[in-house]
Image (cartoon, rainbow, N blue to C red; front, side, top):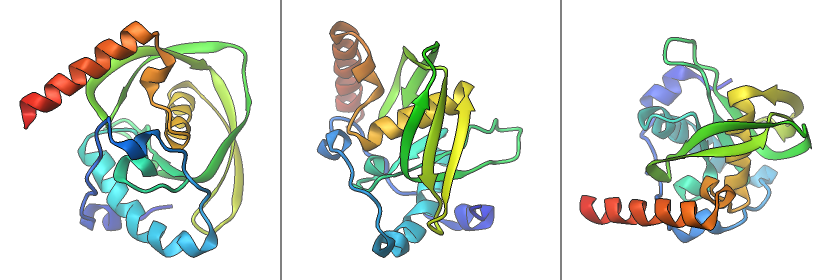
Length: 180
């Protein structure tokens, strides 16, 4: 479990916005020698995610090419439930699909309906290297699938038709030009 006081004191890492090249690159597995870097980055990533606000953040979104992501789908009124997924893999998924509106901190203010498996079984490690397996559904399943996609260099718009994807990417580029 990540200490909320450590997160509150952490300086948020800047979140990269598409079309940053690292967002399209496949990450490498986290190795034991990466632990110190993760321990430094994770509180800063949670701080950035909560500030945004968002419910998930993958390492490439802050410029790290490592296979790990954070999720916390707790509502503002609920107690935080931060999860760190190191070297996560989806090992089973339902055939039943669920459609949810998705957004992404690396594609600010862009949203679209995305169909994904309703429930998934995920294998991952925690910061101590202990292996876990969880079965999740609903918003948490969608969020974890979205973050694992980031680790493969896939953005949520890649699940859309070319027409919808191009519209969103053009709109994002225009908003980014207007902001700078």
